[in-house]
Length: 441
Image (tube, rainbow, N blue to C red):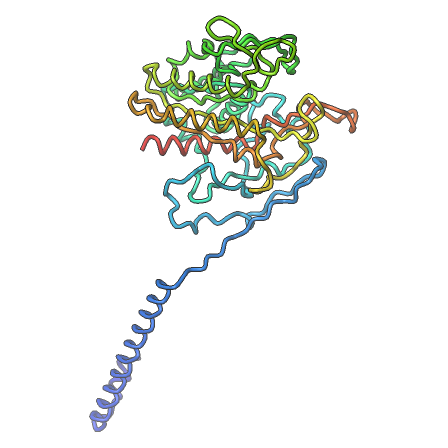
């Protein structure tokens, strides 16, 4: 078409056409210059003016005091937009954040994972609501990648990992086992008489995973049954670590160490092979030393041991886990019927938890100042605040199979300390893997 137009031009009007062409060219030149100046000024204006950012506000489902009503799965439109953050790969405080709705598929269920103990198997036991399953921990200033079981197992090839502590450690190891089962099923190779300490092996990766039950981390004589009923005071030796875990320690490349709640129990304290005092022992004519005295002694001894043992291990100190008993304690009818997370500012930490966490942070900082000298990697797994915001994630009355099948009004003991599986504790593994990534790069 263009070629045909050129052939049809009239030679007698060449000068006129040339004049028109020059005008058109000049017009385009001026128009281009104007556009350039306009966009240049716009760029300068936007870079020098304050930027008004709008945040997506995620409303949690209303807090309900009844667990009989199911909570709907939050929609994907409720998710906070992470890709708008200015520095998505920068290091940040992983433990300051919010629980955000996460409607994505669960990593596992009670049907796909057989490592869940009965007391934490809330789905099987008949818990009617499911909204507690669809939340994910979200640090405020950076991305927290999802736990990658295949990457984790590849990294842990020919290594050994241990969770050392109380029943929360056992709760945590079950969560990890369930997530790893997507890639490989673990083979149980050991358990103690009460099935509190266990060990598993992943043959394809030659990876060993253990849980060592030692609720005080110290030597302790405990006279208590599986339901927490005690026949005598605990005899706790504050200057002796529990050999149940110290004799195995040489085998561990990674270890998560945590405790706390057992120190609130009545106990007689021993030091230098003599009774030094006690905690909550009225009528015994002993000095009340307090649980904080014993807990600080325990953590100081544990951290000194790990730093000076001579093994260059990767150690996590897990902070205390708050409970969510309301209207009583575990032994006095306390319950936890909430079905959604708290928002920041809606709940305060109990005094005993605040004291424990302060001790943990103080002793960690002291140990961290000398860890580099011995080649030990010591990291804090501060799960206290993020756990405090999840009153909805506990088994509550659903500790047993079909708790209310025979009597809908049955009075049962609630569990408002441990976590349902699947449940909030699964996010702890996201944190573990991110801390490992940071510590090895």
